[in-house]
Length: 345
Image 1 (cartoon, rainbow, N blue to C red):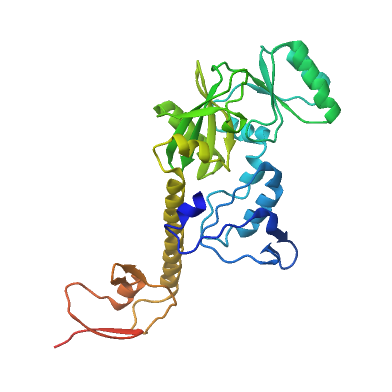
Image 2 (image 1 turned 135 degrees about the horizontal axis):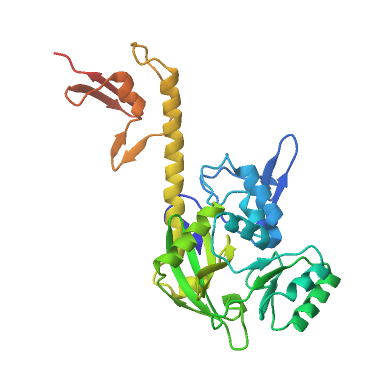
């Protein structure tokens, strides 16, 4: 959906399947697609499940600094795909969350279970779409879950359960805005409100506090595009999960906003900003390296910017030539060449 929307803004859009990508490390490290070096792109939006976390981080790590714009930093693919690491970062940035506990052993966890309130939640650090989330309504059931996890040698997180009537909020942050949000409601006898778990959604307008929590979460993680899952607790909104590869079907179906188009337009605008910013920095570097106080000609190789049918010349041209809008100029033009001289009587 996003790729199709991007075709309205970018000249060329390619969908690259992760299963056909490999990262070659060594003296000549490179990212390969179908066995060949990946093409040079102005923008790459990387998405994928937690199962591909290592590959995703390797790909983005290799491409950072070579691609003008990527909305998600490489470090985020290991961070955001681990609920514990995510919560540690959000804790450091004072993002409101349910109380969360971790322990070193199953025995220590059982002691902890004697002190928490029920029902309570147990989660695997990795997992999406509500998978890997378990609920225990008593010490006995929680202990049984712990024993099973111990046998499987699975790490886990213990978290406070907040009663919301089986609902939560999915907010989609793009840049500095929440462009769409929905309240998800779980099926009867189901506590997970995720759409993939059978939940239903309805579009909502977030209040200022919830909006700010979503925006602060994305900022804390350094993500330009982020799905933020929030519980409406009696003490205010609390973040329970983030998703750097949010599904759009459910949200787009209930929203009056064209969500894929919002993402595509933002990617295009940010890409233009990054490319133009890089050009401006290069021009500034050139200007700092050359003297503007003599009559020697200077030359750089660059693209031309157009506004309609008009050509916008780079800033260094006016600084070197000292052209002024108070003077007249002679302009000679032919295919592939333009000459501009100050007109003197």
